[in-house]
Image 1 (cartoon, rainbow, N blue to C red):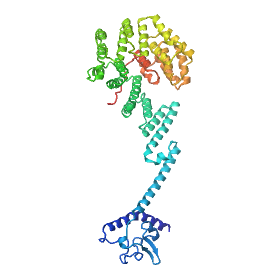
Image 2: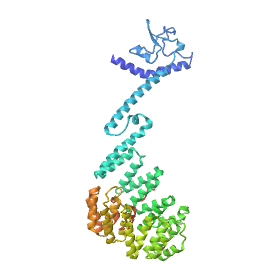
Image 3: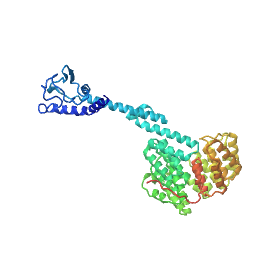
Image 4: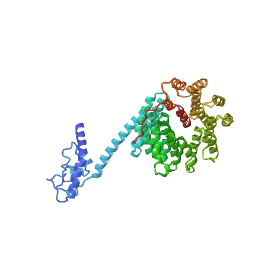
Length: 500
């Protein structure tokens, strides 16, 4: 009986297509084709004609699922339609096939859903069963591996965390946050892969272009990849975005570090309006790089700097300060009429006073900055100043205020605390350095071994001569990175190029 039922089930699966197709052909060729299912020896009249199609079925009753025209009579199973009225039943065929497919699909959905939930993916059955929501499954899997990566990072299992992040981004490649986190994590150990990922994020998320470019730049600068910084900064200057001054400063700084002026020359010779406004600065910097300092100094007075964006003024004042012409630098800054922000103005004033050795105005400005309440930007400004121009007295004053304010170590304050640590290292104040490093290790994931290596670098006892060997592990503000790299340029790094 079971074998007969199974055989009829297989005949049903095939017969729904076979008999409906033959009967459709019969209807199309009216009068020119023999009825495919009725016995040719019978009359062809309703309820008198046998059905040949069901002869090989174990149960003729089951054939009614294919053709409901088959009815049971006292004489046995007969066709209830005249030969001319024999017709196909495609609705039944589609109903059976569709129902079977739907049942199979539902079973698969339930199985997949149960499996995903058992693994831990936060999916709903709608995400699995509704095709327009299938992308949510990839997003859920991405979230799952992102969480595992977060826990691995917290436990200092970096290699494991990067593997989880790679899996997360593979499952959810449109997730900007995952991609950016992975790019950051890969920058120290796998810079080529990281650069490719940053470049991909730039093109895939144009609305976040500025934020992505800034993140990439910070990573490249910290690692000392000045060739890649030049390529990125040049492109951003030509894009004429709202932060063109930031990118021009990055380009000038990177060029000063690696001595390759091709990017500056290409920008100077570019016909693009975004490049033309920078021509006085570019000409001046190229003269300075060539050692023609007198001509570069003359450019500051004779070139038309009125249309140069704000960094042009910063560049002029800084160049005059480095040349020792502090009075001219301060005079130019005083006539700036708000062309630079307060932070840049104070940074330039501090550098000018320190370069001149003007102790009284320098101390007055420091006292104003420390003011009634110490702020994180002030710590950053003074730390950068103490790296460029070491001063134990100002360091002691800043550190004392830092201790009295009892600033907690948080994600927001980490950059300022690490900046103060580096300032203490540059000024060789090891008591303050050890106090700060102990506080950092107690309140963050930083390891004492890494901070010991940083201390060895500042003491001149490290095998590395490049501060960029440590900067990727130090969450420092951009200004402090600039100051440290300028003070400890070291030997040229092995550079990696930005993907074309």
